[in-house]
Amino acid sequence: MRKSIAGFAAAAAFALVAAGCSDPGSSSTAEPTSSSTDGGAMEEHWPAQDTNRDGVTLTIWAAQNSTQTAQSVADEFETLTGATVNIETIPDPYEQSIQTKVATGDMPDLAFWQPTGSQLTVLNAKQNLQSLDGAPWVDSYEPGLADITGILDGTRYAALVTTPAVEGVYYNKDLFEQAGITDLPTNWDEMIADADTLKAAGITPFYEMAADRWATQWWVQVQLADAAADGLWDRVNANEEAFTDATIQGAIDNYKALIDDGYFNDDIKTATFIDQGNALLNDEAAMVMQVNSYFGQLQSLTDTATLDEKVGFFPISPSGNVGTFIPDQSNAVVAFATGDDVQEATARQFLSYWMGDGYQSFVDTVKTVSLISGVESSSEVPQALLDVAASVGDSVGSMQALAIANPDLYIYLADMIQGTKTPEQVAEATQQQFAEFAAAQGAPGF
Image 1 (cartoon, one colour):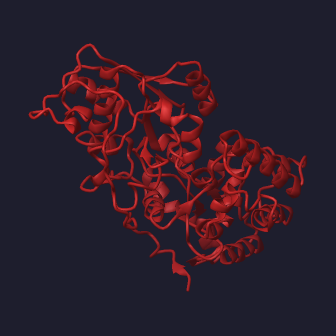
Image 2 (tube, one colour; image 1 turned 45 degrees about the horizontal axis):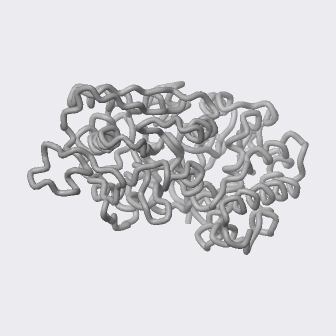
Image 3 (cartoon, one colour; image 1 turned 90 degrees about the horizontal axis):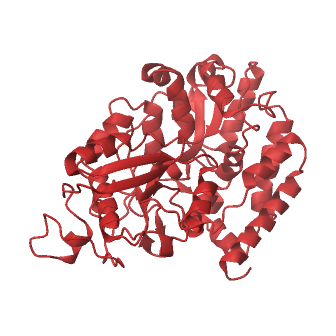
């Protein structure tokens, strides 16, 4: 049975996963803090949030789309502790720029970073990052979030600060109504059936942004949700299944068939991310397969009331309403092992304040969904984002979250849309690159 659109919205709720704490195990020892009445190791490793830091300067690296995220926390921390916090914007491509800097020994105290296993690996987390095991806020995460990401080989390296991005469908409520669609699709086939209904009504079902390339991969990955839940990426990681095998190749083929059959915008080859935001709001297309940052684009174009009235969200997979989570660099922060005890302790203190006493103010300032029990989400969060957050607990990991390497699938898919690669060549190029990355890591079987 398909869910009523009117009844689909739900408050954020997450599946229960127990949060675990372990010995911090740091290679450096922070200075004693105002809360360390017994000189205990835990109190020293995790300084009190208000420990005086006069004369200490923290540097935080951020991408262009996350450079303002921590600003309010930084301002409050400066007032509380006397520290100075400098947020530096690193130019795009952010991840590559960071890797180049770190490889030369240039490290900040903190940085926004995609907290997936593959991205923590390329940053050489064991050598370059502080362990966040035993962090005082972990037990306060909403159920299902503590261990969903940010952990590599059993060690926690990243603090999740905002809701992990979910691959799913943002839809135009007015166009659904215009086409007579009253129930949301509850699986892939029903979504395509709705797309047929939209086409018959003269409405473009889907809008894609192949000129900017990076979102093309969502169409393939959501089709792999069921397989991911059944261990697909474990098999790919072990070289027991390949991108060229039936499951992933079939998802690529299906995506190409939808494009060839006219389900997408006519200007798919030249359309950009900005075009994609305008298209949904301007009734140019009914659905967009995207992640949370897309809704941030919509928020920059109009107000919350308009978004609540016009835009909805539903997760999708072959067999149901299962989302595919893909935490990105704007969702998490890592602390670098700089070798300076005071700097490292202050960085941990900053994270403790951010996720502790400063979290309610942060949530209200950036108008986001709370991840911490007892901290209310901003009243200005649009319902679609609440629905995204509600889907996280039942979601499955993306390639970026579960694979040991992150090949350029999106680039090859964009090449396919531009006509320079066939679907088979997309899978072959992706598999070849993945195998090269896996071999470079020393992964067994490659």
